[in-house]
Amino acid sequence: GCVPSNIIVTGGCGFIGSNFVHYVAENHPETHVTVLDALTYAGNVDNIAGLPDNQVEFIQGDIRDGELLDRIVPGHDAIVHYAAESHNDNSIADPEPFVRTNVEGTFRLLEAARKYDVRYHHISTDEVYGDLALDDPRKFTERSPYRPSSPYSSTKASSDLLVRAWHRTFGVRTTISNCSNNYGPYQHVEKFIPRQITNILDGARPKLYGNGRDVRDWIHAEDHSSAVWTILTKGRIGETYLIGANGERDNITVLRDILRVMGKDADDFDRVGDRPGHDRRYAIDSTKLRTELGWRPEHTDFEAGIRQTVAWYIENESWWRPAKASTEARYREQGR
Ligand code: NAD
Ligand code: DAU
Image (cartoon, rainbow, N blue to C red; front, side, top):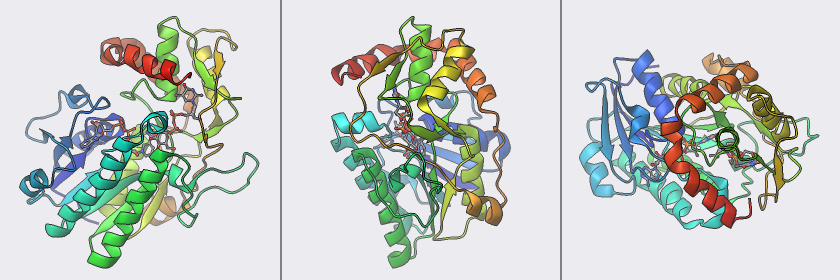
């Protein structure tokens, strides 16, 4: 493998993208990072505050802006593409921004990678594979068929297919990673874990969709970042790698962990209506990444991770407070 000296990280002011920028700044000081982010409702430039100016540069802009890409892509040796509309519930309420950013935005970046012969790593999700039955012994692998359920996951699936075509037809040096559900600091309060923590801090009751038996395969965002760095520097061109840390848990178990850590009763929550088209279960088999590239997760104690995450939201109210009321107002409109 080879260590890139100058990379573009799209969506580097979002939850997982900013975690990756911190990861590179701390572990690979020889790699310069240009963050390209439009600062939508989900982006916050404070997420990358305090990093060395000579290593991390911020450019506010839209990944669909071809002229901007013509100005900034030359001179970089890789694009790591995190920018997306990322929340399933928002995609059900208003799918259009998902098509624009996830599909058209990926197309523009691939065209720039082709034009300037830049290595391209694509961040995607396990949701492209649809869902598994609760009692299915199988997990998703790199060979699972694409079967997305929501407007969000269908636009992510579309973007993955564009990447595969740009590799095969135009020879763009691509890799794709499909990761399971992330948790950790800087996650937007619209997502399950931060929504429940901040509800409890606000004296409001957590909201559980449906029967709460739906299973997600949780991974700490820092483990996602180390996996992406491994694939960027050592992955085989044209390949897809699944990222996961054997973290399967149903939603009610996760919620009860949060309630216990925060000193609340196990039944201190409300059941609300289910998400339309709700995926039952995700589960990742990451054997390929572990055996081929030698990657291992470090945050394997989920309860400890939840305790740290709760502590982070307690200490960083000024970070999440501005987004809380509008997020809950959106949920009220959806009856959830
Ligand atoms: P996020 O919503 O927290 O952040 C998205 C970032 O992209 C924001 O900073 C936003 O300003 C930026 N952005 C949005 N549209 C843009 C545009 N048109 N141009 C430039 N910037 C734009 O998302 P996240 O949860 O950090 O997810 C990041 C990536 O990881 C996404 O591609 C998502 O599909 C993928 N992913 C997420 C998870 C998860 O559990 N959250 C799991 C697997 C994969
Ligand atoms: O699997 C990876 C995906 O994980 C990523 O591609 C997405 O970007 C990311 O948002 C996440 O998608 P989910 O839909 O799984 O995450 P979310 O946090 O929205 O919900 C997790 C589970 O919790 C899901 O089964 C729905 C449920 N839920 C969610 C919210 C917001 C609740 O029960 N109550 C809630 O209030």
